[in-house]
Image (cartoon, rainbow, N blue to C red; front, side):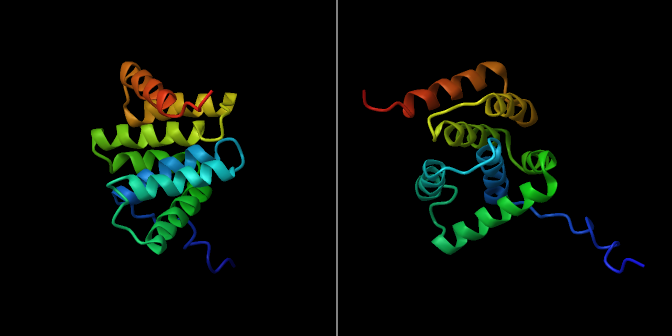
Length: 146
């Protein structure tokens, strides 16, 4: 007899705005299979400068990041869909912009990352025009000094 089999999957994660956005961002970071130092720095910077996370302590940021890491590991692609469901349309655009930034943070965009952003736009209900605008604005902001 499996004593815990009835418990597995029975507890649905509860998302709020911070957890939903962070779940989408962490999913973007994890898509290439590793988290670079640059991606980690960008994640921390996002927490510091975004009005969504700015009032948090470091410990509160750590808790939101940990939630997102756990939920993406457990629910895989379903995590993004569940996170998107709790966000207002304008915050879906914000999450998409943050995800773009994280993908560009290490300076490389692989095939899996490109596919992820396309799928993410669909899941978040981002139009092609809005998605292209967000990606272009992110590229402009992420340019390095030449």
